[in-house]
Length: 156
Image 1 (cartoon, rainbow, N blue to C red):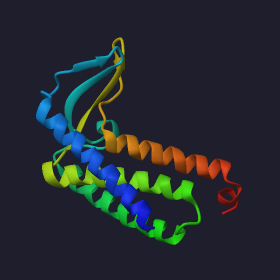
Image 2 (cartoon, one colour):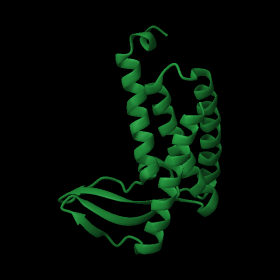
Image 3 (tube, rainbow, N blue to C red):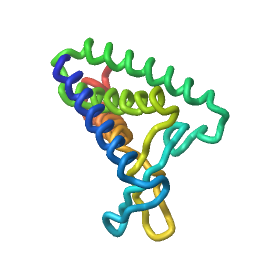
Image 4 (cartoon, one colour):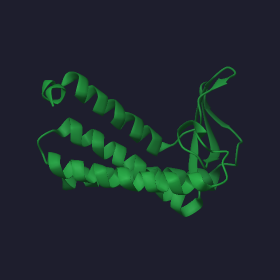
């Protein structure tokens, strides 16, 4: 289990380092073009994914903080139960755990999550996101793939 917790800590460290760099070097809501479909754009999200509940009075900060803590404890227990039996599942859980903790740190420290990666095409733009969001997304895709393509998981 230790190696998966180390993997989650690496995700947290990478996430926090990139957020601190973005917060230091970028100007709020001023896109910096990187590629024809990719900008670095500093944004603060007090809500959840896709700015869900971002326009509320502040209660959502504590709701998402408690939710992230509960999910993190659940994921750590799940990793402990799996042990070394299933690398794919453990890696997926570690990615989700690292991403959840990375965004949790932002909520506790700043009251919002620092986002800075913007993908777009012409006038369409995906909501701005961060490394923690990428880790959570890849982890969830891994969990879904594990359920769909692992016969033992389907039976369970």
